[in-house]
Length: 118
Image (cartoon, rainbow, N blue to C red; front, side, top):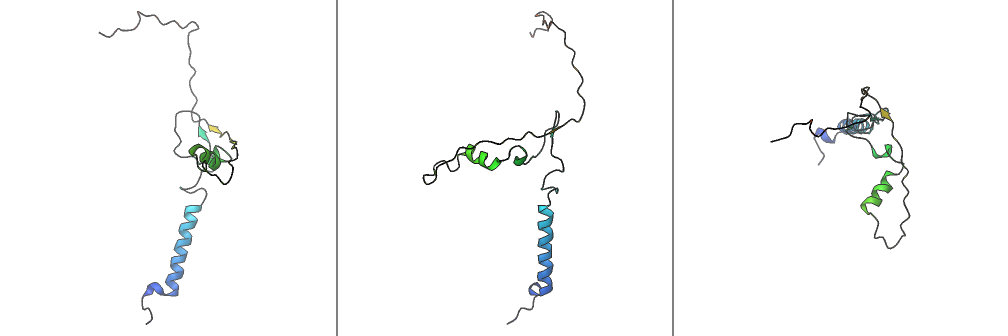
């Protein structure tokens, strides 16, 4: 017996495949909410970054993580090669200018100048 539902029609199949394609494009777009920033930089002071991809900090983040977690450490078939981290220095952004702190040259803290708790 043939199917009489719209779900099995060729037009609905194409519509569903188009929807899947659009979801893939939205999720895999490099600068979407799931992707990275146009220019990745860490704040100088004051703001904590929410998420930075590991490839911004090193050129081989997967090998470093495997070494730290001990993955493949008990492999008796292949010898483990020495992992050398290839670190990158991410750039920083300055959001505001910090005021300069003026300190006295001989910093002397007098013991009788502070209130003593009773």
